[in-house]
Image (tube, rainbow, N blue to C red; front, side, top):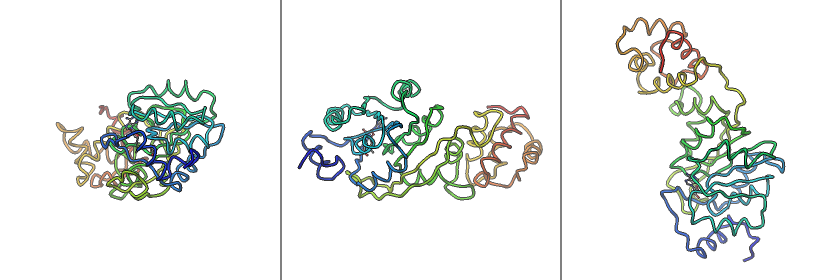
Length: 295
Ligand code: SAM
């Protein structure tokens, strides 16, 4: 074997892992990619070139990092597991424009990281095969931080990807769909079987691309209140929107006031939250906010 063989070939991955005596930690969501086609699809979806930067979360032994290094002008990778640092140092040795940071991505100051790492880049993408146990907090942190991001291309659990991209009316549509679609335009890139990882996860995976919006698709009077209304509306999916909102905002009051406000927002009280579009939630939350209901 030569060192030029890609990190992600099953042979080189096994060789690196054995030589370093690396033991996978399930608790850190360690499932490493060993499939060239899937890696190419992830990197292609990010639309990188030498003027652009990529932030990778959880580089593992560097399968994706290597491909990002070949496509982007700057790559910064944040890895929580200290045991992987010497491996990454060895594997990334040919790539001077790759920086590996040891840390928990949920605890880092992302604004500062962006300013320090990507000052010279025309745009930045997050590209990662995420640890599944923290997918939602990582994604929401990235979206809510108001970072100068072009897009986010990630491998996540298929079921979560379907919820993020779901349209109103189906069982997958919920508060996660609305939160993600408020900040971005999601698009499923491909679904991925467990066989492309070692060790194999117990679930199906998918690659999803989120084109980050510069401005939200709706202008609401109070963002925190909008998300509170969305959350409250989905508290019990089988209940009507009127019943869910009553439990959260109108416990001491009569139903007439709630029904009058729903009528003002153009929402039938018998509808369920899963039938409301993001635009309808925006109108509803503004009507409730103007009526003096607050978080
Ligand atoms: N990118 C590699 C690949 O595709 O082969 C590894 C992906 S593996 C699914 C997830 C990686 O995220 C692991 O290397 C794990 O140690 C790392 N990780 C887990 N939690 C993390 C966190 N909170 N912050 C940074 N990295 C984390």
